[in-house]
Length: 207
Image 1: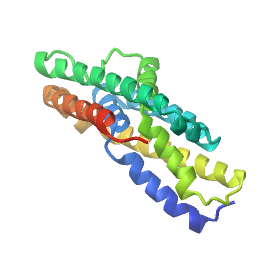
Image 2: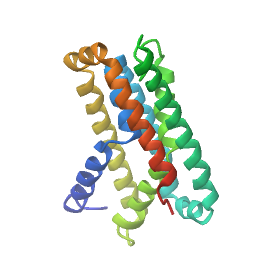
Image 3: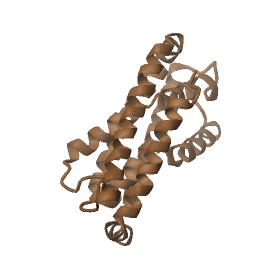
Image 4: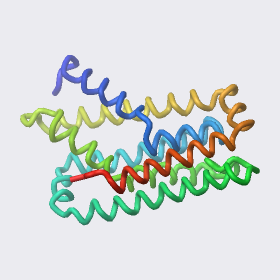
């Protein structure tokens, strides 16, 4: 087991990293502003489920196998970038043509919202490296499987907490009403941010 004194700095750093602007946080914020708290939570839960997959992959040491087979990361890289560009296109269309907000369709089901969050995270190769670095660098090499499970489960709980807070905050009435009044401006900003995220995924050195 890892002591609380050793664990809390890891969790603090993890919380800051999770809250940093990225494709997943953008999707949660947009969903919460455009579709309400439950849609934001649905996207957040989808992202969290994707994190469980990457945490399991990293914890089992399969990340090293993926690094050894770079083509796996390349497939994820371009698939993920393509999906982010699709989201950028939807947001840009809303910004240019008006009508209903396009960051998230208000008629979108919770299942589709969940799937959107899950897809964004599973197709993000940086998420795999993020979890891989946690177990390879942050967790001591001498750590037992129980200690690794403790760190992984704790980080997953912190991730869900941070993302849930984001969904609650950005679904606040004053924010959501402001978004609905000025959604073309917000959609334009989200289009630019999703497009930039896609560019970073394509151009960043992963391995």
